[in-house]
Image (cartoon, helix red, strand yellow):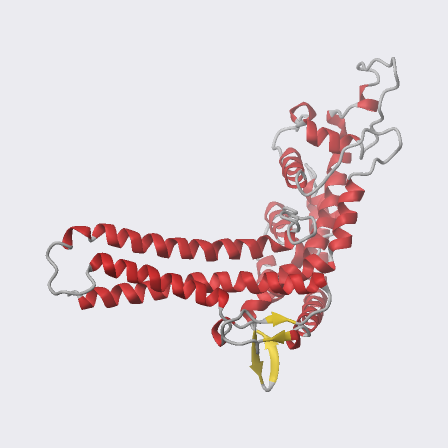
Length: 375
């Protein structure tokens, strides 16, 4: 898992909850680019036919221009005009609510705001020396992913992992966490005292334990206040439970549980156990049985959590003012700047995605019309 700070927090851009949001925005842009490129290629591919038009009129090159113009108009219309097709709200049984499309994009923004303080504390704690005599190493959104990815690879090394193969960043991160002091002036590091000052291969158990504790906390932060993720885990929870029955040995049970940390609700101790080399079948079975026993309660808790999130998020739907005229973007009348910014960002993301789709449709329809006209 990667922490990413996007939208003002600290997981991947400014916070990690919006990795999905940013991906959706990029996908929207890609759709627009693909539509434009497709139109251009059609024009180039048909260029040789211009000299023998069957009738006077637009012509194929002109048709491509019309298609491009239609695509552009569709894209701009979805982004800069205020109408029912790109509204963030809809009316359900006389009640104004956010659309599903908007809710998906608001999810990351909302989680970023709600978890901002916890996210800052998370990085601060990882950057704090365990003791005053430890080497300082700062952890932030820029180096967290690479550190955790490398640490995961180190612990999963099928052979005995070697500390000597670690990057300096990973060594610096770990040395302040697991009891390595800074040598006093004049102290020479040799084989008799090396373990006091430097990471050594026998530190693997402590390294794994710290990784498990960090991962548990990151998993909790990723899940907390994250409507998209919580609803997704809930909707697929029955499939998760069925999948438990397909695990027949320790290896498959370990892989399945570690691949579904939010549904399994694994603790740091359980994560640590599942990462151990030579873990016993009994240890794995104990964790596996705990997950199965707790499944019904876990599903109910997730449902309660995401429904409460949905209610809180939907409360802002009434703040939408779409009565600002067709030639406007509409606005959210929210006093709090952070919440207002989150709502605006979600709206922009939704409209970009829709704009790309409508641009492609408009371009295709215009191109077909031009081809028929020149047939």
